[in-house]
Image (cartoon, rainbow, N blue to C red; front, side):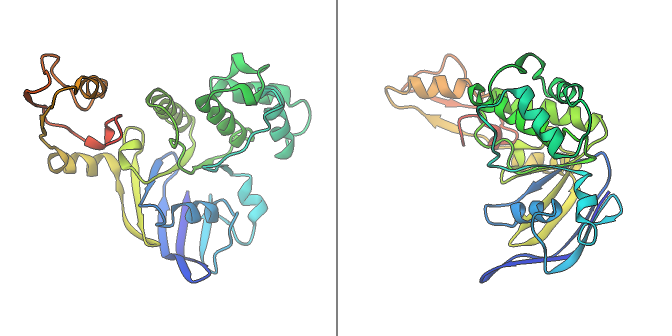
Length: 278
């Protein structure tokens, strides 16, 4: 369980967190959502014991993170938005290095191979980290974060920079980790990126908690309001636009649509899912 009470954190001339408090139950996936600058990253770094708040309390699995940070870190895995890898090392070498850094003693090869298997990297052990695609690099970074088998995983904007296929793969991965009993917090400024695999949402704005609720129930209640109808009037030479829109699952465009004719798309649920970027 994660318990936060009265958390406050300040940067020079700015209060990043203001009396933040919430409780997250074990085995849940919480979407930490808010606009840029809302305090999401600061909150995650405080939970990860990488920043020290000037007021408030954080308890991770019943452990006071301020009083026992080393003990708390054994429960944690943290994936920063701008994660780093040792590009000259192989996948196996990276994982063995992090196993040792987390204090795992003895032969670290089985531990590294187990983490690689969980992340779908079992056939990449001999490849250098620098040769991997963005999606595979992220998988390696997550494997490093969970090499010590933490109970809690914190992920800051993990979908940033991923293509639609890699995002779908990330969703499957997070659900798999949840099924193994892990408690996960995933941040984003776009709720639609997280709703397929999150059980709860925690909305932050200007350093304060705006809402904390079961996500799927809240999403169902808001579906009607989120549904929209769009009418497009296409000018000549718009074939590329039609092709791009046709690739977006949330915007099924009739193949019969041609430039110069108007076409009405069906109702769009969760329009921010559109892979075209709108």
